[in-house]
Image (tube, rainbow, N blue to C red):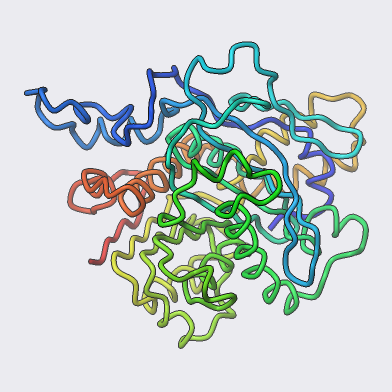
Length: 390
């Protein structure tokens, strides 16, 4: 969970993601996967190492981004960031995107504004930020998913953002927990119905293939969506949920056991904010969904699933940032960038591998990627736990 002090400087950071070379894309779901998509090839199927490398690298699409507004729970106006696939070479001279905050503009490495969406249809992925966060806090992942052929939508949960903490407008946790699933439902509805800002995007969205993902309190939000707590029509037929370092200890057993949506739990063994016991252990035991995949990253912290280390580097490089603010950022960065933690680039690499592979499998039927998520074939020295229940 981020605090306001972190985000006052954090917004001035660009994504920590390092884009790889852009491959020739298209709308074929097999684009960018070694040995896939060519009916005439006689080569051997890709190895698990090749599949993992494909998932970790930037995908075949360029990435467009825009900010829209959607009415959420209690008619709150939610800023929503939308990342989407763009055909390579189709937007020459497009303007590099920036993430904006009052008085600050943050360039992003991968995304451009004003580019036309690739035709798709592409699966829809909702990303829910942590408590006291913002919609673009995990650009290393959200932009990455768009490059692999997903439309990603991420709302600011107004009343539970960094801005709210900074201005004292944050809502009680009980209200936040009630609002968040409704916010997710509203964003899904807007993206699939051609609402304002989505007019040209909706034709590229496959409303039959939807996942909800989130970090920390956003992980709780994803679990709530998987349990159909909220507007049920929005979550009927939900295809996958992904909970990163989820805050789940307050969820009752009967709610967790009601979740039958395929679920991925990714956590860090050094997380002291939402420690794996009980926040991962309980849902890993109680959630009824199959498949259920659990991956614990060795020595990863709570902020290993965000761009906090990039924010820290940027704050330290700017002479106009107050020393007290840098100290506050450093405090939060200890849960992502500390010397005893898994290096942040490695944490992001593994997260991209696991999440992209799971979403490929569940939303695109790409069963070859199950090998990366199976402990018999996908083990890694930096995964202390890798479990897959089917």
